[in-house]
Image (tube, rainbow, N blue to C red; front, top):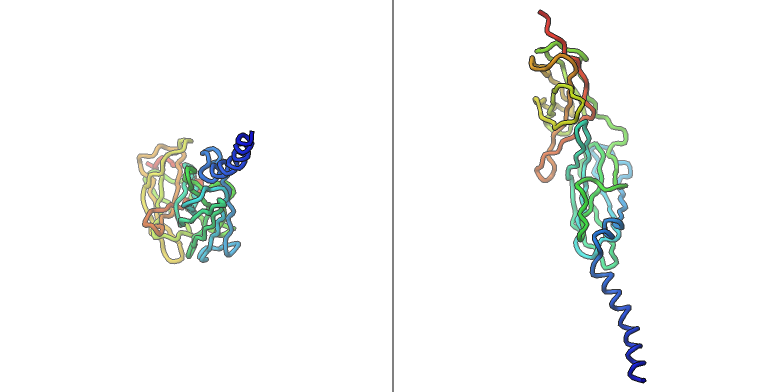
Length: 245
């Protein structure tokens, strides 16, 4: 009887230890996808274009080990939404499943940013995670203008804009189809001082009479040497007219 009583006491002591080790050693994929949470703060609190911005990210429920924290710049056009990597930090997650990363964005450009985290088996899509967005420039200043709303086939209009921190703007002229497609540049315009740009864009004889769309995007290089595209938003509509005989 004494041996049986001792065995029962040992079992009660060993069981909590085994449960604790199980909780620390891993977490199911579904649980990680559900419970990983982020708190994102910026300094300054309301950054403006050109500011040196410090992004502080606190992560809960990543398993102990390495955690990759990325700051992405989001850009939307009529055709798609993209997210470009602007900065990243490889942080260490503690045994308490807590992570802190501090990421610098020097001379930040205007736009909407967000944070993406990868840890353990948690690898979300390459877009900012929910509730992590912050703006550099609360009131966007980027604008785009076209010198007319109608043009004869074979003629040109002036396309101009501002707020491009890169050296080149790509534009696309395409027949209106009502469907989203892939951005295929028709030509480029050089960017001048202060992010201002302007150039003549042709409307070829190959366009069908009717509506055409004009879109533009600013191109820059991130710190990793990769091309980043900042869209000027919704396309401008132009009515293409038959050339006068």
